[in-house]
Length: 328
Image (tube, rainbow, N blue to C red):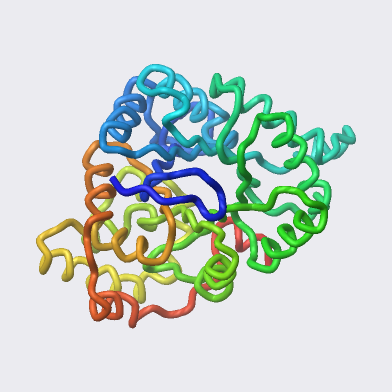
């Protein structure tokens, strides 16, 4: 495994981040295809054995049970100081707003609950899961500054935002002498490249790490056109993110398949090798050991400039989907 600094932080992270959305009690969240603890810990241990030290979860994943499963497995198989743990906090609910819970109180409450589920004293990276227009960014940055000063968080990141919002947040933090976001987790892969419009340039210029989710387009970039998986069949949220542009995407996926055959590697390796030329550490989900094998092997695939261009040239602009579609 190769390791790299996460933006301007001193965190040395593996080039592959294991996404933990697939772990957790299927009865307590939005997904039906997640793994039990016994199955989850096997995948986490396998990732550790392969050199992955960067793990991403969230309070929203399966009612917090993803955090619980990750924390238990890390206690069982690793030393806390040897891993980089990222989790995310959600926005205030309507009930929180009605009860007058402040942004600063909310951040601390969410973090304390996550730490309890993880059975940890701190997280390495605390991520603002989605920009909230009901939460003044000044209060968000103050809340995050406070939990860093308490020693419960080492660095902060953000997910699901526009480039101008990230720039605005960091500019305000800088004006106060507070900590800035060192990473951004957006929706980015070979068939959804809208992050290249503005976010990618901002990150290059400001040394902000890109750690995108949906790195394999919910499995589409790992399978031949027409192949299915349990998640592709059952996950209506993931289906909705890609179905609208399936014809254009199909042609790109065919090129991934073609290049994989030429190099005698998997489609996963080609798709992630391309993404690794653009970002610091993609978040890759895994529910089987071979998912991790493909991701780790991708780190060592070298694509020529011509091969990258061949994969890229058919791309057409996409409308925003998922969480970002709600932020228009």
